[in-house]
Image (cartoon, rainbow, N blue to C red; front, side, top):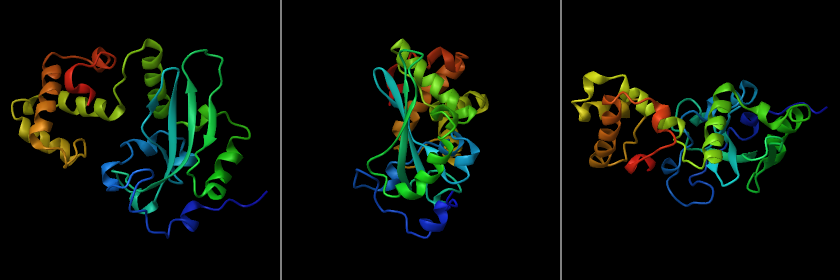
Length: 224
C-alpha cells in the first residue's frame, strides 16, 4: 500500500488561486460556509477538507467537498479552496444509497483521491460526515421531502446570536457591529440592507419564535 501524501506537502506551497472555479471574481465574494470544517469527520477536516453550501434539488441534495488551503484554514471566511468531490443524498426512497463522486474540475485527484479511496473501501459515503454535518443533511433532506425551503446553519447561528442579546434589540446598529465582529454579517453588505434584514430577526426574537417555527416557513427577505 502506497504511503499517504499530505496535500499540504504538495499543494500547500502553491499560492491560492486568485479566482474561484467557474467565476472570474473576487474569491471573497464566494466563500465556503462558516462551519465548512466542522461538517466532516476529523480524519478529513484536520487535513483541510470541508463541505460547501448544500445544493437542494427536487429529489436529492448534493454536498460538495472542497480542500481549503492551509493559509486560509485558520479562520473563516474560507475563500481559497479546490473542488474535490460531492456526495449525493437521495430524498425519496429511504433504501436508495448515498453516492460519492469526484468533480470534473478536481485538478489534484491523485493527491485527494488517496484519502477518500482508502476510507471508502470500507465506509459508506454517509460516514464521511460529523454529527454536525449529519444534522445539517437531515435538516435539508426534510425540507426537500416536505417541499419547503430550509434555512442554512449560518442563518440559524445569526438568529440565535440576536435572540440571546435582548439588551441590544433597541440598538440595531450596535447589534450589527457585534454580528460583524463575529463574521455573521459581511462587511460588504450595505448598512441599510443589513439593518433592514436585522430588524426581521429582532422582531422574531421579540415574539420568542424558535428556529423550528420558521425553518420551513420563510417569509419576506429571510430567503435572501
